[in-house]
Image 1: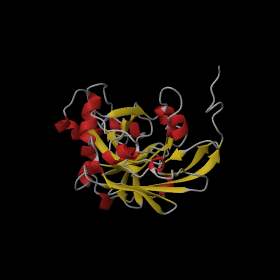
Image 2: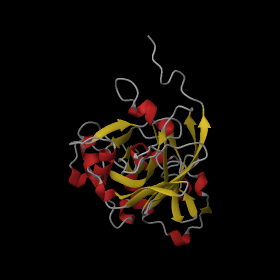
Image 3: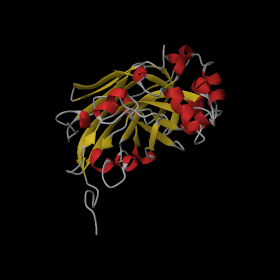
Length: 295
């Protein structure tokens, strides 16, 4: 099953180019907002399984119309250093436990977007990531049960402004990675049963057609189930919550010489069985006082 978001309304994808409105098809039982679908995910999944896609006409759509599959999560988490080779290119040892930070909801966008580079002193980098979306409240669950709490997966980019991220006496991960448009994700949610192995998917990205990242999600230090379980022992996970699960090697900061995104660049990201993202970068205004210190 694939669930999309167009104009803040949940849509069931019935073919590669056709969708149907969830609230209309269910006569108001589910939706219309995507968050309502996640809040009643078990019942929604049971209902969706009964839909005869051959008997539903649906509407055509363009990928550019799609928004993030879970546009208003209560919580949005991201994981640092979750691939051994990415830790190596970052110059640090692989962590013994998952390392989490947040990405703020105002950074969310759909799969096709224009992203502003915040000023001339920015070093904007790419980080292609598998994104998991929670489908049921989870508190203190074991890794062996964690997939039952995952509604589905999608493609994400943890776009990162490295100057702000690394500025000051303490890292500014959450702010440096939460400029407007810095969390594109989509194009839709794909349920795990649609994938032959949701723990082993090809993942990668290109900048202007040049391959930058190519790996498999099986290379994660902490797979999806471990991340969900670990988080649930600290916080309560809620339906619709989003987890960016970390990036493989090949980021611009880890290259010699380093490479960062510039106006006019096109970043395409993809994960096997889930779909693609495309971001075009333009010059935007800087952050007042960034890189300076008073006193």
